Length: 537
Image 1 (cartoon, rainbow, N blue to C red):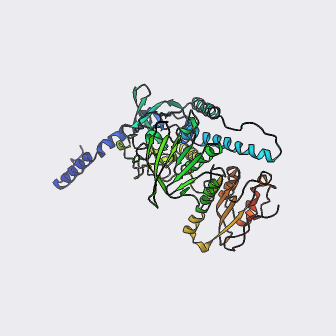
Image 2 (spheres, helix red, strand yellow):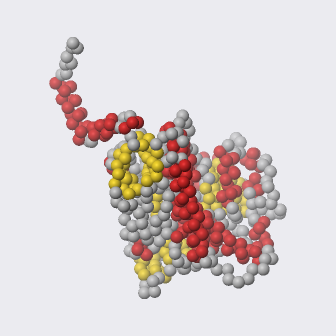
Image 3 (cartoon, rainbow, N blue to C red):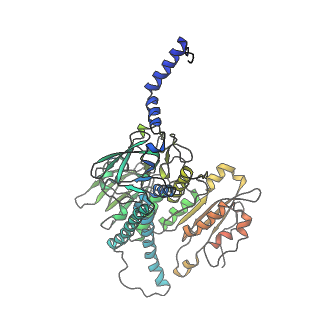
């Protein structure tokens, strides 16, 4: 027989106090919960993904390839009251959409199609200068455009559902919220509820447009990017409030489609981007006829007897009050992560003051709960980033991979009338990191060949490359403002991943005649003070 364990009174008292504190703080119940699901056989699923956007779908399909049981939950509630729901912010206008998230339904895809429609309108005017005999009415038929855009979006919705089935990923059209760290409540469209358990959970709920709730009439009488791509009637005279890339892109294509459009900007345009490039983007938009209401904020929105929206706004510098009437007002003042009503309070997952999930390498403060895409504090709000991060996460969870997402040197393009493509550091960020004396900026103003016959202005067509001054002069950032900027910058992004240097760039033979060749021909520095305007062929 084993000898009895002797515990002194002091130790017993200390143990009792620890036990009492563990119970009081709820840690004991969490420990029991984790113990209950300590083996894979206790779970309904190896992985549950909350949110069917680009990142969530990519992660789920990748995980299924490892013969894991995977479930994706996704649901959009078109609440006309604009109240928050368990999974997603609804649109105050009642707009809803299918599987695929923001990018497919109310983001990148419809935005690029509308941008293309706008460019085609410009091309019609250019065609006349090139000798084409174009007569008649060149106005856009809004309803036909929306029908074409939405038909493509719906085909992508269906395609995603087919892919999930082919990959043996279960799909549940339901709102998901945490009951605890392994149990998730699913609420179906018909109100029925179901509780499921998961060994691992990925939160991929994305973001929704923000409304200025302090402005009377803002939610009742304005739309957002959730609504513009399925708007059933032409927008008419439009006010876009905000200066984000979403605001500038939407204002740009609406103007190009022939609708009088103004932009209300509280402070600066394209916050977070290179300041010089952002200024040139705004200059070009104003140059083509888009009024910017600088340093202005809305005070009140109301409808008049004609059904138009009367906007009262104030100039924050002069404090003057103004009024104007619009057919459509679109809010594009920012986006908020969807984390406030998914039951995170029932877990130990931590979020910051803005609602972004705190974590490292997509792992939250709970080891088996992850976050990808826009809601991650340390991430980037871009579709390709969410897709890549989701795939890599699945490979680490269920494969032998140790590869993590690299959030540096991520390229992107702002699809304004004159497109802006960028990869790497802005000039401002490079100066902050390395010091102005330790970087060299090569730049050029150029004129695209296709602009010449069409007699288009090219004052804002500009390229900037930021390099280290020492050693091999590694390229730190590249910025391109001009036609097809996304197509141009993509290849250079790959080169920068490989450690692109000034010598490699300048020894590269350009493709003639293209806009992209002007990048490899860069040779004039800002420091020199020489005129950077490209002359000759």
